[in-house]
Image (cartoon, rainbow, N blue to C red):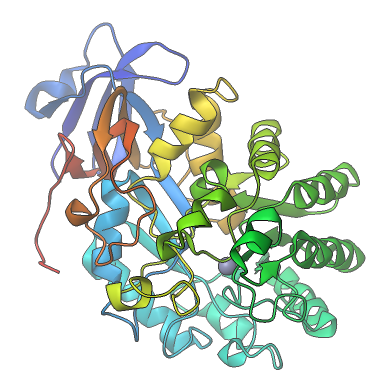
Length: 437
Ligand SMILES: [Zn+2]
């Protein structure tokens, strides 16, 4: 294994340091006298870029198996590395569904083979995501993929008895149920947030209560059985309030917000451009501000992308016919810098927590989210916070183009990513192209 000396990195406390990486591990962090081992190291000057522990995305749709026209484990892994990630959790709504040990092991191995990030499969809660019978939770937990996060994402686990049994089942191996909180009855045919804009556009609305009612029910269930619950992509001010209340009562609940819900509102639907059609929908400015506040004060634990690639034929059509979802791996860190850091709401050490330490802890990914200290696994991201770039969907490494940020000038550029001690990104460009997607 090659040795690397990363020079002139800025740590989150503002100090400048050099970081020696060898055998996949951080060997030394300092700025004065270099240790003797640096002599044969490759030098990588990051020119003051901020050093973060490698980013961890707890909510990624990689689409393989079954929808390789929109993304594969390899193309999604490359996109993730470019965005500064060293681990992603792959959602279970593939074809076939990841509801057996066989499918999660297949996805896990494809991730290892791609070799750009750790791909941790999420197992389905119920067979076929149908919401009826529990999937093989124990077999997936015991498999080579060691699944700890389970979700029917895309669908809500609506039956309270099924939800209760799932929460009880995962307790014995420290698992967590990640709920896509959406009452399916209140949201039949819903197209966008229910509000002034939806009534003006004549589109069927999606009320906040459809999300909040499920969050409220599930924090009470998690409390009742003493298990861990994670709420996917919170979008409403009321949802933040319920989670704040649950945490104040000591209930084991964690929550995520997506970058797009930190920036965009339902106003973007005004021109019927389906690139802004997403599940859960973009909400109001008041919701956006509550989400930012919740992420800043820790009510919302993490940022997760909900990277949802779709082929152009599913997005370049009428609003009603278009698929829900946006890609987000390559823009996530920039959107967090724009909405949270530049607004003064959080510091870079909070970014490290919300995008690496906390998601790694929720997913039980022990090699990720470690502090930048000797002995830690060398999963690292270096971001030039003073730089900016223009989003161009045609230059993205995802196989899909459905980014809502196309054409926007965003702050912050990932200049280097190290995954298990080897660079996947250098000087802002992907390296290690051993396989071509
Ligand atoms: Zn979802």
